[in-house]
Length: 287
Ligand code: PMM
Image (cartoon, rainbow, N blue to C red):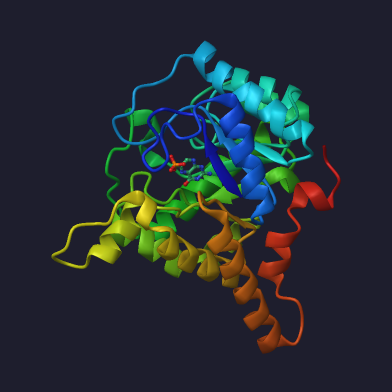
């Protein structure tokens, strides 16, 4: 999943694809580099970002979704607003990615259920507390699992079909470096939820911290793509359905190598590699 942030202020690529034409062009480049789908967002979720009003989010997102869908790209819309999801779906989006897991807008779940679209349910404990508050966990994996489970139950109760639900641990969202690394170390446990898994580590703060070491300064976000690709290989190896990244080429290579190694180990196509190659919405022919 390649990322196109149509925002002036996203932490790693803010301002670069703010214009519709540039954003569509960038999405096409990501596909040419190996992305199976492109995630289009119009509102930054970085800590301290101010909310974008609905009209502005629609203005940013819908034309880019329409432009990419018209080119045959499988588009995901990254939004917490039901109205934006609805208009993006009408413009050709195939999937809705909601970092609030359906908590931000009571109309989100019904909109997605009515459209029959796949829905990414991300874990973000701090959402209702007004932003990226630091989470306190005794057992981060257990608690993220339990809380994601509760969100998935709510989503299913709202009428979204079980085969349309994707789960995401929400790396960096109310989580520190140790939490993020612990979650990545236990991706296998997230599979117990029984839904495809999306992992979105791209350029995130914890990668900067790992690269900096105990004393150093974290490299800027755009210098974290090799580290991102390493996480992509680990996630593919652990059976993730997709990885969400800003720079696709390195990750596409990393996933390909992870797949080849897995094939050499098992003598067959690895389940994780297959999942990354055949997203459920494609395999099942939705939209
Ligand atoms: N992270 C960001 C934005 N959207 N969506 C999902 N499903 N999971 C994430 O972890 C996630 C997301 C923030 O990253 P960006 O602003 O650099 O794109």
